[in-house]
Image (cartoon, rainbow, N blue to C red; front, side, top):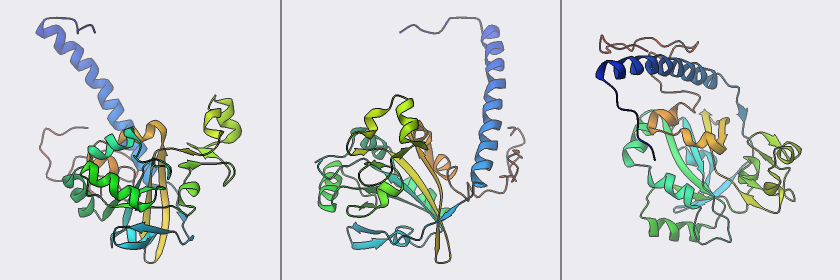
Length: 246
């Protein structure tokens, strides 16, 4: 692997300033996108999903654990497997008690859901040393309804908002063969007794996590900070350092 070019401090500073312009453009574009995501319409969830967890059966409302928002990580774990997907497992390894606590402070719960039976989930979780809430959706339509288990014999195949025909044209015929598990994240909002699906992300969209702010940016309520302006324009946070700029 080649190393960066060696230059003088003055040359480095000029190159860094040019890169900073592009970084600011990306930051502003990301903030505008996050604002549009918060304004995304939502869909009421009326189907009574029943999950299996360490403390028995649980409804989708129970997964909120009393908070207003819920983020579900769809962990690839087919009922016939003994271990969950290694890529999903790597992402769970990067979760932390601090990240979960920061989400909870902002009225957001985080849970893992897989189609594997609870006994396999509990065995794998014990072997990995994890303590995060993890539920089995086996026997429910949950994975099919949120397009992370693809099986045309059960439900019309859709992945990353592409239909079966669109997937074929994109050269992804392999996801149409038999049953296939896929990764993803879904966000939900609770308003009284009503639950709404606000957002889901799949494929490379799942790589955008990046700490609690990255997770909160997927949600309808966002980071819940005073400087989140509705039209996506970045303003200086109240009490911020005078040197703060966007």
